[in-house]
Length: 143
Image (cartoon, rainbow, N blue to C red):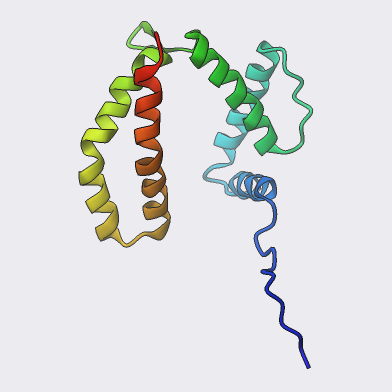
């Protein structure tokens, strides 16, 4: 007789492996392989420019390193983006961008709901939960 347990099997595996698997699948696809190659080349240049050893085999870990660097740059006001031959601090753009997302939240929510797409619904729910926290965080920070 089979004994039942309350444990759920780890069907998906660790998130870092899912991240690597997704990249591997994109690398295999002829339509996206060149994008992954270009992305990884740019990532290596970025990591070298920031003085970070690019020895981590898991792409998720690499992204965590970059996220920490970018968060520090955001908080310091040194993360800049170029647009229309001008340079802007990402920190200065956060409140207007978050305001636009807040403004269109109802419309996008209805569109996602009517689409019946579970992944889109989950992603949009995440935006709706994190958006108020982000707005409060960035509006209370001294610039």
